[in-house]
Length: 129
Image (cartoon, rainbow, N blue to C red):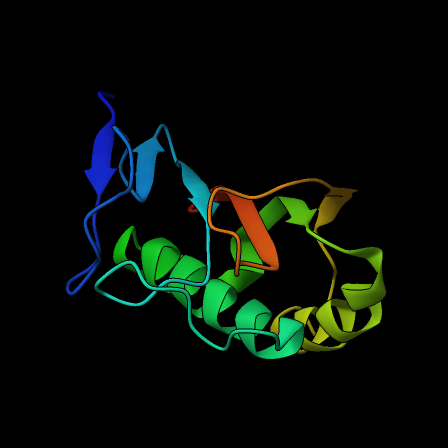
């Protein structure tokens, strides 16, 4: 099965040469997602929890456009700017994964937009139950 590019309606133009998601053989790969609006401006500046919710809403739209749901998420790669935001990020993150949690890692690093506090890349397996 050839890969399929996944671009949800209303998605901002990517900041670099990539697409929001790719579907291949029932696996959705969601690009690293920042808390950006449709004009690529950082939203909820200074609020890690709100930025996390925004990022996860974008990820959800990519997965749903591909035909899946958040319960299909198997792995998240989380990048945060400051460990001081870890508890706020986890509080919101847990709301999006109320049942079985996906595997994940979380590292602290610099992000491409200085006001961004979080970036998440996701892998989801759809139609493989």
